[in-house]
Length: 251
Ligand SMILES: C[S@@+](CC[C@H](N)C(=O)[O-])C[C@H]1O[C@@H](n2cnc3c(N)ncnc32)[C@H](O)[C@@H]1O
Image (cartoon, rainbow, N blue to C red; front, top):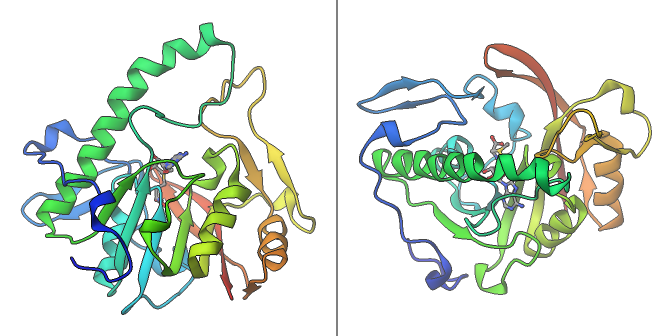
């Protein structure tokens, strides 16, 4: 895919993944020739709500954290040109800094899971003849060579990142519309709250925050974005319904 807005050299060369057994599917997907492959999250029934009912035809989209790429390929099917930013193998994750002796047990298995997750993206990419591109890099320091975007999507990713506001700020510099989707916590509603999720007991090394919707809409307003009504919707994790929210900001 040619884009007049970006320097194509920064994008990953698509990885060839021949065996579906080498993949870990975060998303449930239906792939031509393979049928339904069950993953952790099934977003198939709720995609329009998940993406804030935004129209994607002809839009250049920056997606932070594609995982298995179900959202990427859905946006592409709706007419978007998608660039996704994914964490590098070296960085691995924004690990919550539990004592090293505890975290060390996680690192090895996590590396394998992350490679298998990336495999699932490239496997689906090839089977669906996707033209989406991936930039493996630092989400806190996005290069200007990525270009400009109509829309940036931060779906189910900010909760996992140490500095979510820095990511929103970076996306806001690159895109005129922002879509943020995250878990909904009714007890946080009504005030701009970002609550620390890990405790010394729960060993939540992969997740940092619970957000109220106001925390995000207020920050978007600070950045000069107007937000429309916040949507809540049900999505399915291993068969169990969870409530998520989506806010859309436009400059
Ligand atoms: C929970 S999945 C969400 C996938 C997809 N966006 C969705 O809404 O279903 C989080 C994704 O964000 C990526 N991610 C997590 N931390 C990241 C970071 N610091 N920089 C870039 N990507 C990150 C993960 O590797 C994964 O692809």
